Image (cartoon, rainbow, N blue to C red; front, top):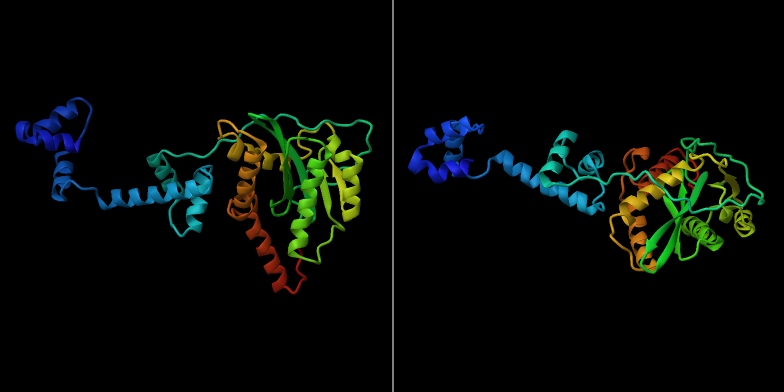
Length: 311
């Protein structure tokens, strides 16, 4: 409106234009127009500050897979050194026209239970906040991805304490090797960083899918010294933490892509996402910091108290 008044002021005058605009519900004070004129009709310092801040918010949003909403962008901005309130971050998001990814509600069951196979007892019983350090409890599950070449399957193993994804695999088959391979990668991840790592005392929790009750998977657990745990049959929350991780994966990686060509394309995207998830993504359950940072903080604290470092 200020520009409109400026273009027509010589013909009609500032005061008459403001009066007519007000009659039509557009209220522009004469003083507002003259204030803009005094600074050469340029943006105010506040408008410039908002423009620079909105650009910084967009950069943070893009750097985090375009998935953060108001709360996580606010935490990300604070970690980046911006002393903004959460309401301002929300306003800047509206200015920039960006928003977070909404969590999906539906999930297709990929595992099939073998009613005749022996099952481990449920040692966890939904007590997701119980672990006090890494490598006490691991949880596992897998999901499907539709590609133009057919379905592929993505398996994950996650540390309950830190939410860190330790192992993952993508395959065109949902047979037992898919979940065995993810477990073996998780073991390799820990052994690579600490030769003292041992599976003794570690719980591995999953649902009762036939892949996790198979002889081959059970033997892998036994060889590593890991105790198996399987959730209650028919309990929608028997593996809630892992289903939450898979929900993030589907919402942040799979669903935004209109179509996936092959399982190799899914594998490449998963590799990039897992690295970001472990080293950059902020998790509210662990104090809005990345899993790797949460683990390092634990080890630093243990070292300061003279305790032996874990894997």
